[in-house]
Length: 221
Image (cartoon, rainbow, N blue to C red; front, side, top):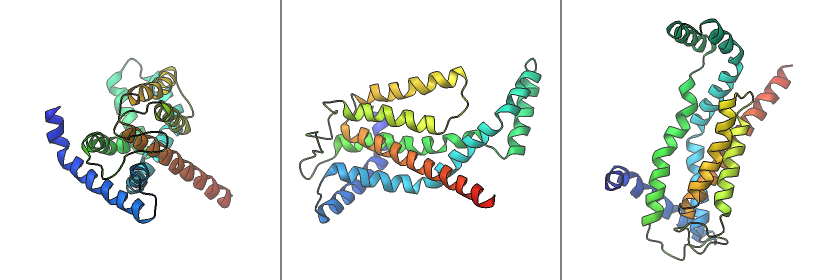
């Protein structure tokens, strides 16, 4: 843990400064509260990461579009893994798809998520860090409402981007939200609030991109 703290220390201090900044904004507008500050900060972070979200959604949609061709290649070269890998690489290149692009937002969020854990744990709160039904955001949600929301929003976010699913993907779609909800039970409520807000923003951004694409196609027709 000491190693992790030393590694994330610059991110933690930066996030604490940013969180204090948004807390002062809520104070200016008359809603002085760390919960609202976390929500505002999360919205800004998600907007900054929007270009990565666009790449993620386009990559996932591209992967879904080439699923039939991928299945044909897997059946054709099932006894030749090396050739299968080469042909899959050609297919990705021709379709303009990068399988790793779908992981970019997750990679970008992980340092922020870890930093938020330590930032909220060690933050010197100016006032009372209560929010809605919670007396403090530095402790777990006593009523498990946020953990349930974290599981639910994770499920919706996954379902929104997945059309065709094999058995492994179906299992992951069930397991991941349950796992997120379970670990959220012991996490500081502020961190889970950050995760739920991030999921909601992801859902809205993905809906906007899909909705915009449909409108473009209708307009072209």
